[in-house]
Length: 103
Image (cartoon, rainbow, N blue to C red; front, side, top):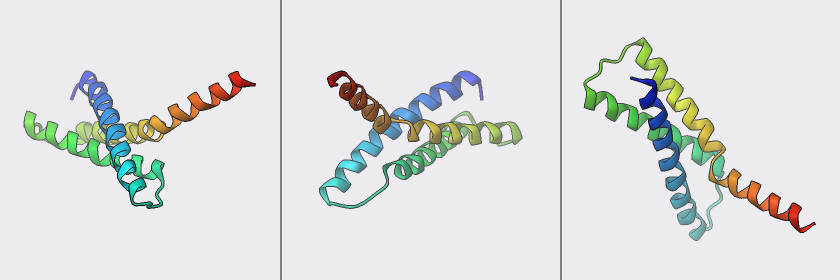
């Protein structure tokens, strides 16, 4: 697994995670369900990164070894970090900037 693939995979996972979480949040908001968006984003990111990694290993017929295992764990961890600092945090930062400008 190359570093280029890891970067592209991290981008793809973060994009898919943000879109998936926003879709799930809209469904849960309609049903008035309480949830933690950060926990949901973290779990979704790990699930998507594991699925993407499994698809990559199957498609390229790569054997799972220690190096690949460490790279997959790193992808899952980085996906978790990106997801918890995703869409909600960006919107929150924009709102805070707007409030500062109004003052």
